[in-house]
Image (tube, rainbow, N blue to C red; front, side, top):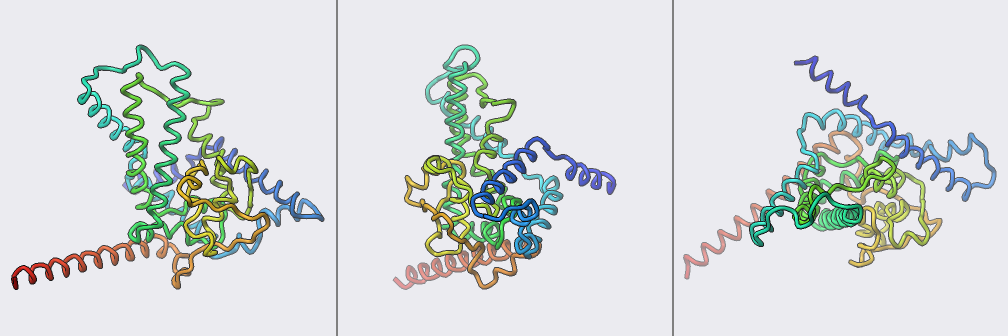
Length: 332
């Protein structure tokens, strides 16, 4: 039993997608080089690496918490048995397919034969949009509802960002996000399964479109100190600099730039904020107990305690309201 657990741990630590990580780290290196060449006048190789890995960031307690959280979470996830997001998408897709087929008396896909190239391109585009609007709506809810915010605060508690800060997400938050991600993308997939036989996302240069999405949105870089902007493309794709605004503790930046890949959702719903070039940003929380989130106990246990307080408080209020209504009915 012990040996099996140890084997799982070793396998989890060694099972790394080196191609994807190579692209991620490569994009970070190029981004650092671009920012360095723009900002620094007296340049040297040694100075570049000091710029890319600033000691005040790398040695910060928040950075150490990120590393410990990343390692422990990577070790824990196989044992938490959190289903993959595709599980919820498939389940909702099947339910949607059955409901539409039953309601309209449809038997089999509407299109004959395998889906053609144009169908697959349209399918891929609609699924990307479905995932993106799904993320945006859930992200807004995480900031609006205290119950969800207590979990999401784990991510926002980072006072410096070091790339792997992107994975500073509580496991329960991961689980709830995956459930929600099954709704809109699942319905979209279910509709498509009525239209075409076994639609699959387009693969570009051997890479799944979702891997390309993660590379394009530069999720690793957006969780660093590198303010990379995409220029005119910022109106379509959310650049790292725009996302860094979302982590800022400046009150002007609260509840802004919620998007994942596309920035037009924020413009559409009035949550967009255009950053100023050269603006210095401070990250983290303004809560009095912000330092409590720089330990594993604070990152794993504290959010659950705070969530329970919200649940207990709501239950007590509902019970008090019910008691008042009962007394009013009795007295009348």
